[in-house]
Length: 183
Length: 83
Image 1 (tube, chains in turn purple, red):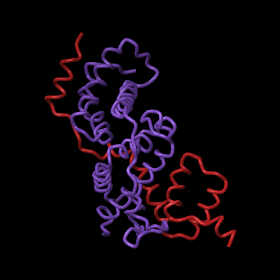
Image 2 (tube, rainbow over the protein chains, first blue to last red; image 1 turned 180 degrees about the vertical axis):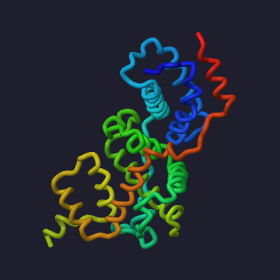
Image 3 (cartoon, rainbow over the protein chains, first blue to last red; image 1 turned 135 degrees about the horizontal axis):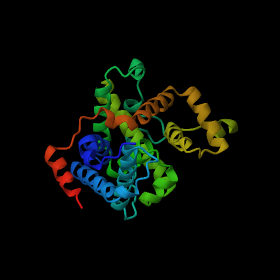
Image 4 (tube, rainbow over the protein chains, first blue to last red; image 1 turned 90 degrees about the horizontal axis):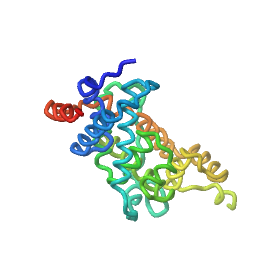
């Protein structure tokens, strides 16, 4: 199995950075996380046992750093502002006229313009509130269990449901407007 | 009327339960309510399909990103990887 620390930066730096920056959004913080990943891996290189490929080993370290980063940032208890749902629903909980999900049609079948879709998804994600982004990334991009996410971020399960619900409402609307092109 | 009230869900609640369902946290009653609601409400059905569409793809976001580290930053990291 290949294990060549001298080549790591050359081979993996861009991929690890892209992986990180779409998750943590902040460029400077993403750079720091990638740097720390390489340095931790370098220091631990004697412990590499070859069960995972060099690449997967680096990704495992990186993913830990990303979760650590989210966890460190959210030490204080959060209180959720009320009323974000009112953008989409009336008092009876019905969709407001302008918020009713429209037909997306064939756009959902084949990723014709995959690049465009992903770049708009990324922009929409960046518009979410910080805590909504974190929950979204951990759940849907890092596949972490809800219980774990609550523990990491110090939030209750009911806060978690609300945050994911809001993130989905905002993202769906944003994609409909900017990707599908329906105002 | 009683039955109706028992199974009726608002769209706000229905979309909320879609998220709760992902963790397998629905009660029997909620699960029935959601199923019936999605059977009759086109808007929530779309919400369900569309949110599954983009959440399922968000994992691949980085594969479509052009983000790259600057040569200077790479150089800096490389120079730190020394004993």
